Length: 270
Ligand code: THG
Image (cartoon, rainbow, N blue to C red; front, side, top):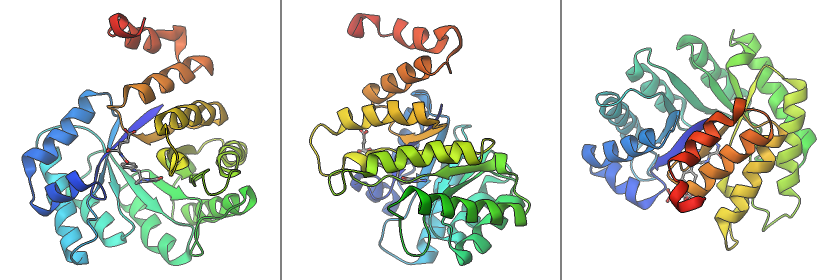
């Protein structure tokens, strides 16, 4: 499993103030702690919701430059704005990156998929279009088909595509857990060479014991074929869930990673 550390996200109040103050030390702390916890990528989302597009472009340049000046870790550039993605990718100057993300909307695809070709980076495609997140597996799959067609058209290999089946809260629609899980399984069948990624925490929105639900959902999603998770790498319960699931679906040869992870914390967890 590929772990994409989610903690540099300006919708979180602590990060929002770090971005607004351009607090480089605070930003670096958040990057280093996630890298040290085993994140494979760090997601960088600096959209504070205040200020202009130029402010967000300035913020992504600052954040990317600050992080890569100190640590070498792949970055997931997270924005809905193609110009912000472009600015972040240009600042990476060929270092390993991930575009997060494009929707299956004509205009979005035409602006963002060419960036994946130009910068030769993988790209996340969200299973949604201009009308929002479809509530059925069929409609989410149709969105993925449209993304795959655009990638083919612009010369982006399917191996570089991460499909995001998307997650809606089960508290508002009890079927949404299964819709996401079935979408993962169908994407795997239709595009076996592509990868599948998602953010988990939406599933438990509005309910108590969120980590309990998120961990169960991670187990099921890994069984269904999830390749990468946008998650908090500092949340030990979630990391344990991930390692256990990898063993049980045969993705951890000789249970080596599982054993190593538990050896270091044997005193606390048996
Ligand atoms: N898909 C894709 N990109 C995404 C999302 C997605 N980017 C944004 C979002 N969803 C994923 N990122 C976050 C970031 C932070 C939190 C949730 C989702 C969050 N974090 C808590 C915190 O840091 O305080 C801790 C959560 C925990 O302990 O588990 O709430 O769906 N492609």
